[in-house]
Length: 278
Image (cartoon, rainbow, N blue to C red; front, side, top):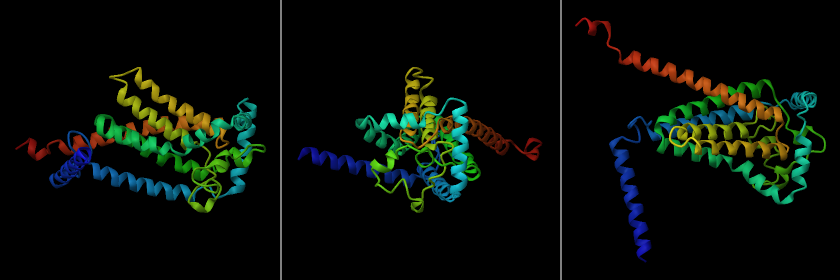
């Protein structure tokens, strides 16, 4: 009984603090270098909505996607990187690992949201750079999806078992149907690996100064995702390599974005000529 009363009082206290913050404007204005929370949430939701719509509209040319996949397979064979079929066969032979792989593949969005919130709350100095990098990835990858539709191994490589579709936690048809708002022919680059790399990068940026060794551990997340997308038949090795290129390009774009924003801020705060001569 006392525990229930304590939880109610704690919840009431949190609600009151949230209302007081909203009334004081802290949810709508920047505080101590941290962007306004509600502005960030609304902005990111708009980016996600726009990205989802444009992503779903890209890569509808199935013939081109299959042709590009065959060309990529030929290139990987020439480079001795054609491991997609063998990796998929390995996972099918280890049934105990299939369901964990499916959960790893599907629930990585939880990691993205968790990292974004954690950096915002605990490392405001890193948040803006991390958020800019994330948005830059979404912007830079869309032209690639439009220009280079790519069929994943599960559709274009004979012998590959569509593991996600057979064991999907979202339902058996979620990863097969084009009409459900997905783009099934955007394997190049792998956004599962790309977003996972972003998570590792954001945490690394936050921890590298204070905990340099601990900051290396988050990079295990994209390594695990690489293994998952290869063994489940969703991506090729070169898709993963392209994801790393995407992250590097996005970091560069975010740095340029930050430089231009800083120049604009300084220009606005600089006294005008009439003020200097007054």
